[in-house]
Amino acid sequence: MVLTIYAPLFASSKRAVVTLVEKGVPFETVHVDLMKGEHRKPEYIAIQPFGKIPVLTDGDYKIFESRAIMRYVAEKYRSQGPDLLGKTIEERGQVEQWLDVEATSYHPPLLALTLNIVFAPLMGFPADENVIKESEEKLGEVLDVYEAQLSKNEYLAGDFVSLADLAHLPFTEYLVNEIGKAYLIKDRKHVSAWWDKISSRPAWKEVCEKYALPLSALPL
Image 1 (cartoon, rainbow, N blue to C red):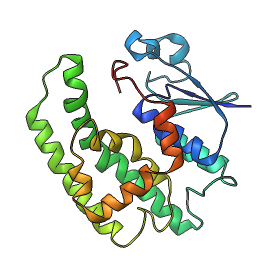
Image 2 (cartoon, helix red, strand yellow; image 1 turned 180 degrees about the horizontal axis):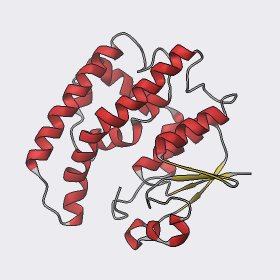
Image 3 (tube, one colour; image 1 turned 60 degrees about the vertical axis):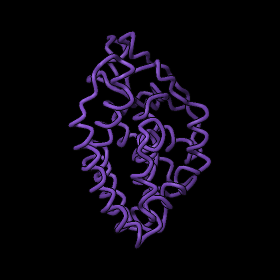
Image 4 (cartoon, rainbow, N blue to C red; image 1 turned 135 degrees about the vertical axis):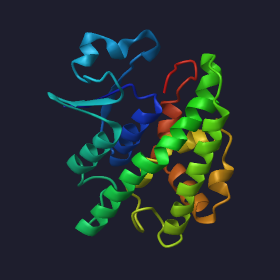
C-alpha cells in the first residue's frame, strides 16, 4: 500500500518528505489548508489528535511528528537507498544524538527567527527585535559547536549522511534565503561545506522543486 503524507508543503513536513525521496519510497500527498483550519477538523484530529502537521499513514498505521516519521521510514525501508541510520549501534547512537540536538538546540532559535523575520510581517504582526537578537546569538553558539564537530567529520554523525543532517534542511533553507542570515552558515568553514553538500543532494532539490510553499499559504 502506498504511504500518504499530509501537508507536504510545510517546512516541518519536508523533513519527512525528503526522507521518503532519499529512500526511493513511493508516496501520495494530501494538502491540508491550515489557513482554513482543516487541521482542526474532526477527520484530521482523528489521525493527529494535536491538530499539527505532518502525519504519515501506511495502510491502517499512522504516525505523526516529523522526526518520528523520518525514523520510521528509514527503518522500514532500510534495505533501499542510503542507510540514514548508521551501520553500527555506535553510529546509530550518534545519529540519534544529533537528531536530538537539532530538535532541542538548533531548531528553537531558528524557528523564532523564522516567525519574527519571515512570517510576522506577512501576517501583520510586529517583529520582536529582542527575540531576533537573542535567537541569532543562541543559533550562533550552536553553530560554533557544529563547526567543531564538522571539522572532525564530513557529516554530523560521522562520515556518512544521515537523518541528523536531513532534519536540518527545511528551516536552514529559510535561514540562508528568506531570513537573510546566510552568513551564520557561510562564515563557518566546515558548516558551510556541510550545508553545500546536504542542500545540493538530488532528493532535497526535488523536494524544493515539487513542494515549494507559497508564502501566502501560512502558517509554517
